[in-house]
Image (cartoon, rainbow, N blue to C red; front, side, top):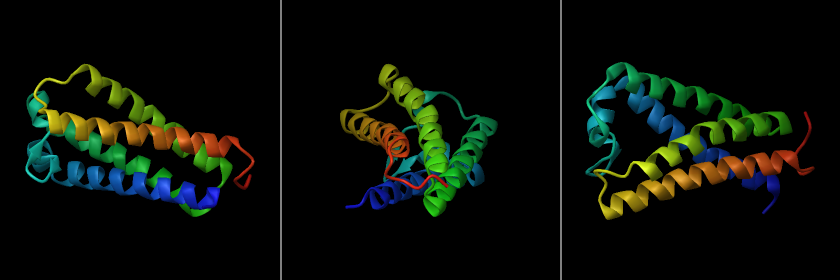
Length: 140
């Protein structure tokens, strides 16, 4: 698999995740609070009372990250892939650390699924930074 294909696959995964969270949280904050990540699980409401402003802000910031990820996937330039990777790390690493340190309310399977997704998100951000730092992508 070419580096460009790997980068586009990583970006596509990140785009899908950030768009799903962004649209849901921004346009249906109570539903997001009560039901995220879906499939009968609820990971947000175990961490405190509902705050519509905070949930909508999370949604809007995820949509902003999705815009950067889409631009990086379309252009596939070193600069945009680097920015997308760094932005993903800036969001993903503190988010993962928070959940690693605050596990109350999570069952074993929810904890494992949550950690897997959080760690994958951060690893993909780091992978994007690594590819953008190499000579395997265009410089424009």
